[in-house]
Length: 62
Image 1: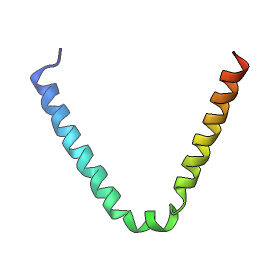
Image 2 (image 1 turned 180 degrees about the vertical axis):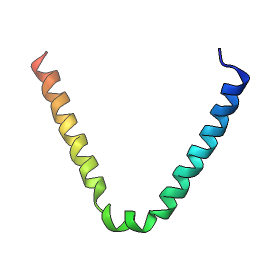
Image 3 (image 1 turned 90 degrees about the vertical axis):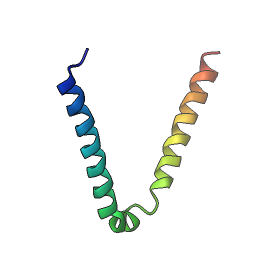
């Protein structure tokens, strides 16, 4: 399976990578509030398109 050294590296990597992500996100919080105000509208639009596609596929194959 994995050696002891690989498992130690894995734990160290996960901790450092997660800490880096948290630090980077907190650093950019001000920019996120400015540039990503209406990003939820894009997500809703994508969900609507996928729902329409799934509905049409289901209707055409029955």
